[in-house]
Length: 478
Ligand code: SIN
Image (tube, protein in one colour):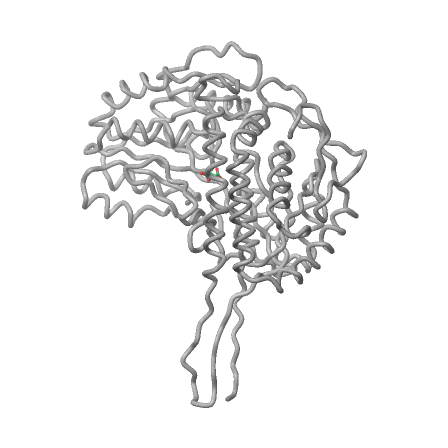
């Protein structure tokens, strides 16, 4: 049971790691101390790799069915602890409690999905090139995995990496965000309770992530890196992987276009935008970043949007009925404000500035900006805050080109009722995940990931486990 102010521990070899080096973790809403977490040093990291290495050998002797059973138990324990975990996520990360509850279900969903997929890692019997040969292939866990996860979904970003890795028979070393390590530790404790081997999921907490990750990423024993975070850091990590030829899956930054065509059902487009923009106060990689609205329906769309946005309630509180929590910290708020100021200076117009937020802290009430253009920084950067940027367009050709013109290729959304247009847009958008008349696209059964500079590999779906599997081919003379 988590109690405010207590000391929590990094987890090495299934045990609490004791150390005098403590990382304080604060509630972003009020700045109060939630817990102190023991930090690891480089020697501890080396021990974790040794443990993970032994565990990987041990996992080779387990069956997919046995690992699947452990994952099912982990899923059930996460769900049994839903309200406790949700409360923790709200305290540690700031999102409103109903969103935290949804995150627990989302996170558990990955565990359940990969409990099923564990038993589907099929090999092949391949037609031989001579009558004297038998050719087969199978799939085996790739080895020790290093995972680096962000603060915006402190549970789900972990389960969607650890669950497929374990399903595939890999041992996992996690470096969670130093802003949200508590959720990671609680997840690992539940995994141990579910029967996961002691070295299968270790949690290394450190406020010197760069040095720690570089040290681990250079180790030949670690065979795979999985990272969710910014494109800038993703590129650095990917370059580090080259030396030891590590596999990498990288889920990086997005800059999602959200396109509303003239034939769209406006109410449903606004429902979709409220999710795609305001989930987690806009702090998601798949958040609608550039909202393109056809000029013919702009006035109607904006009038309805203002009503919906102005009804959003901003604030912290576990029991209270808030729609938007605090941003993760003051730096995040400052960055978002700077993007807004730059846009206004370059000609954007406030459509709504939101009402004043009374509370102290990194709260930001929602803003709608009109007349946004490509010469503004806000068009090019992930906003990660509750700011809607409206861009007018006149033709499908024009909006397709604008949607595709940036380096990001994570998520895109469009609303249209014209079937031919839906087919053309689905084919033409250079994005790996596309919401068609839908603003909520995250789902454990679907392949999550990015094209272009938004990353490599997919998480979830049938593809998710493949990232953790090595194919071996056998050529037998008979
Ligand atoms: C992210 O922001 O990276 C993840 C969002 C999601 O899984 O829905």
